Structure formats: structure tokens, C-alpha cells
Image (cartoon, rainbow, N blue to C red; front, side, top):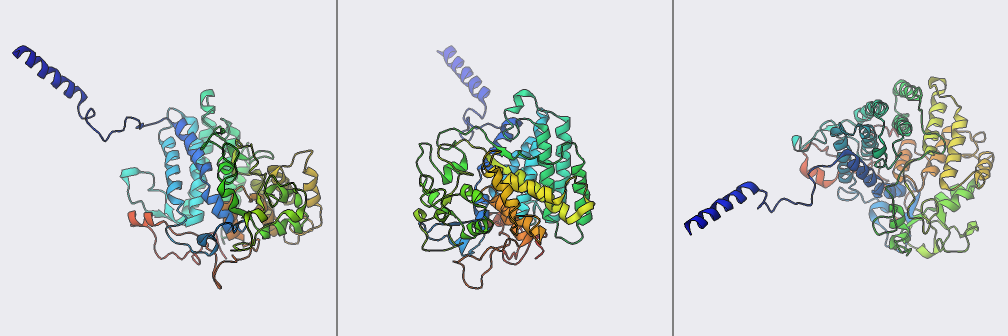
Length: 501
């Protein structure tokens, strides 16, 4: 008995000693990985970026492209300009996603191809943070417990550093081509280094042209544009948008996010939120004024939705006055259209950047700086290519709709036909606003604040004398956890550094 008892004690001690703390540690989740590989984290970060719909949706409202139907009670935050530090918290999600890309950068030694694309995607999101909030944690961010209260860097300096980061990304991409197994985790370009560099250059162009109305920046902007233009790869070419598709399937939570949110469920049933966003009357009137009914019929469905048998009658396309609180029920107004939603097409890609936007930025650069930039084409050529690219994105092909783009560009209409437009910059800005409709509302709102064009109406629901926001508050959660958050922000008057008027 003594021998058996001694043996039991010894075995028990060995088991407990071998397992140590982890055997009894109820705080350890065996289903949670403590680390991952860069390829998986990169694919997840890109997917989360395109699936985050709030900036596109609310940007579309603030840009005057979308409003809401009166099937729902009017939303006060967007349409009565009731902005506070608890609504529009895109901050947490943006920083969380950027942390994914920082993980790829920090742990990319074993899979170096992903470091360049991760820097590009992090820069893509960081510009959005600045465009919404201004100063933000940057040089001290993403350090985890190493820096729990990062300082807020100057917005202009962040912009300048993003250009340098994109240069680094280009260098890394050239040095580290993707291996065949890695291409499957690149849900943007499938390992195409050339297109990643073109995206980086086009993102640079966006960042640079955002500053084009700031005094004293011309020399810096033109030098950086010329440097990007001097690369072998150049900018996004015609026919190449920046999209992402992880492999959407007909299953709840795995469909294209726009399709599933504002379109249909996996079984093809209409989603409740499909009744909420409406194209604005101003958008429709702008298109009709230049005879641009081709894009009108692809940016929106007629009243009654996709199933309505009245798609070719322009009068059946009914927009809603921006912020109208009554008189425009969902069944009597137009739905978001086939450019982004079509029943059964649940596996379309999501958009990060349009070639149309890049060409229109090139048009503005050439128009502003002339011989100061080494761009090969004329401002008119870039402009007309940008408009044609917008038609392509909304559904035109070489045999269907291309003639409509030509008709618009030779219509003799101001803000459409280059030669008939006295103010060339306003024509560029108008066509960019139209091109971004449905695809990138946040970029449209940023451009609207930069240019003050087009002159969208104030919300019909806003109190008399009110003003639309020119930025957003820092979220309350950040203010509670970081003592470095700037105070005294007035979201209706404190403009960002590139918003000069």
C-alpha cells in the first residue's frame, strides 16, 4: 500500500509539474491563435477594409450623392447635422485594420512580398483618418503596450510621410516578387507587382492633389508627381480599377458586402436596408442637365426597384431631395442601381480606387501645373479618358454605352464637354463627383470639402442657419483613454489643412 501510495503521489506530481500553469489556466483560449502568418493577416486586413461600409455610406450622404427614403424616420446625425463624439466612430475600426497591416510589415521577413502591399494599404487608410479627423496618432501608433497614449502628429506631416512610405513600398515590391502560393492571399492584384506600384503612384497622386489649393505647395507637389510619373509602371491604366474579392459566395455573411447590406440576402430576398439609401434629386438633375441618362440608369434603378418594368423611362427615375423628411417613400423613389447591385450577382468585387479617379486627378494636375509636370498627355485627354472610365465602371462596354460617353464629351454642355466648359477645373471636379458616386462616398466628401464643388444643397431637415460638418469629432472612447487627444474641435468651422475655404 505504501508503495502504491508513493507511486500515485509521484505520478500526480509529474503530471501537474509537466502541465504547469497552462493545464489549469482557464483564461487561455485554446481556439485563439497567438500568432499568424503575414499572408493570412494581409488578406484579412484587405477584406475588412472593403467590408467597412460606414465611411462610403456616410460620405455619400455628406457629399450630397445619397439621402434616405421616408420609409424610415429621418436620421438626425446625417441630415440634421447632429454630430457628436459618439456617432461616426470609424476611428476604432480604421486603427484596428491598420494594426493588421502593421503586423504584416513587422513580421514580413518570411513572406517579404506582402510588406509593400501592407504599407500601401496602411497608407490608404491613414489618409482617410487624416481626411476625417486631421491630426492623429502616427509615429507613436501601433506599438501596443509600448505606447498606450501615443502623441497626435500634425496632419500635414503625416501626409508628407505617407508619400515616403509609398516610395518604400515600391522599393520593396520590386525587390520581393510574389511566389505562386502567396498570390492566392493577395485578393487585390493576385501578386501583380506592376499593378501594386501603379496603385501606390495613384494613391500618391490623390494625396498630392488633395493639397493642390494650399499656398506654397506647388513645387513639392509637382516634384512628387514627376517622380511618380518617371517610374516604369506609372499610374493606373484604363481598364484597371483597384478591387478586392476574397471569394464571395451565396452564404450569409459571405456575399459582397454592398450586395448583402443594401441589396439581397443569400436566398435573393430584398434586404430591409435596401429601402433606406436613395439617390438625390441633385444627382439626377445634374445627370439629366447634360443628357447623361446612361449613367443615371446604372447608378440607380427606377422607382419600384430592379423588378420594375420601366427602366428606360427617365421620368420613372425619382430622386429624393437631400434630407427631405417626408413625401418620398421607398416604393415611390429610385433604388441604388446596377452599377453596384444586381440580383444574383453576389460575388462582384469591392472597390478601393477607380481608374476614373486617377485619370481625373491627372487631368487636374496637368491643367493646374502645365509644363511643370512631365505628364505626357494633355489635360483634355486625361479628362476624357477619366469620363470614359467612369462609363466603363458603371457598365459601358466597347459595344454598349461607349457611344454615350462620346456623345456626352461632344455635347456642347458645360461641365461635360471639355471644349464647352469655361472653367476646366470645375468640369474635372464635377465629373469626379459623378464618377465616385456609389463607389467611394468618403472620397467624394473629401473632394467636395477641398473644392466646394459641386454646389450641393443643404439638407432640407437641417435647422435654419446650420452648416454641414467639415470634419468629424475624435471619438469619445479615444478621448477617455488617450490624454493627448486635441480638445476644442469645432466640426463645423475647424477646417483641415487642405480645406482652404
